[in-house]
Structures are given as C-alpha cells and as structure tokens.
Length: 148
Image (cartoon, rainbow, N blue to C red):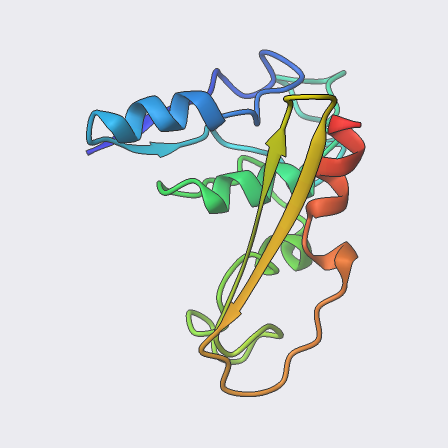
C-alpha cells in the first residue's frame, strides 16, 4: 500500500523534503512517495500556477525517483523537460534511450550534529557496458545548493 508523504506540490518551497515522513510511512509498512513535480523551472500559461516557478526541477525528479512509490511529473502539456526526466529512468525500461545499461542510483545523507555535513552517494552496479556520469548529471549539486 502506498502513501503520499509530501504536502501538495507548490504549497511550500521545500515540498521535496520527505525524509522524516518517509521513515514514518516505512515504519508502519507503507510505501512512501512524493506529490507530482515540474521538470522545468517555468510552466508558461499554466492557469493554476501562473506566477509560480520551480527552482529545483532535478532535485524534485531525483527525490521522487528515490522515494519508493510512483513517480509523477506534473508538467503542463508540452512543457516537460524530457531529457532531464529520462536521466532518472533506467535504460532497461527504454532500450533505445541514452543512459546506463545497468543500475545507477544516487542519494545523499545529511548529518547535523556539529554544523551541517552532506554526503552524496552514487551506486553503479550490474553495469553491462561503460557509462560516464558527471557530477552535474547526478542531481546532487542541487541538493548541496539547497542545504548550504
């Protein structure tokens, strides 16, 4: 059974922060996921949010992907950044796409005992061919910019 662990999208600036609520959901046997997200900063002509922007589309996509529930981009029709979104989809799902042939995951940890210390984690496993990934491709830079 799944449960959304984030507030409504755009109800607050840090809507992507689902760590604590995800832990609680998992502890009671539920699969956590975050609400929809935009893959672009602006959605021109969006009647529901005409003046709202998304400062961290890659971070939103990464958090949604690393939650254990469904991933649901909520872009206006014809406003999806398909290249950015597809970075978070395994090549096995779409064999003709650019991407790793194997498992490439990223996540991060934050320790706040004395100051704030963040650690990015990249896992590459079961790789069937070489794949080059750069720091900018991981989405971790957005997290660093948000936290520090």
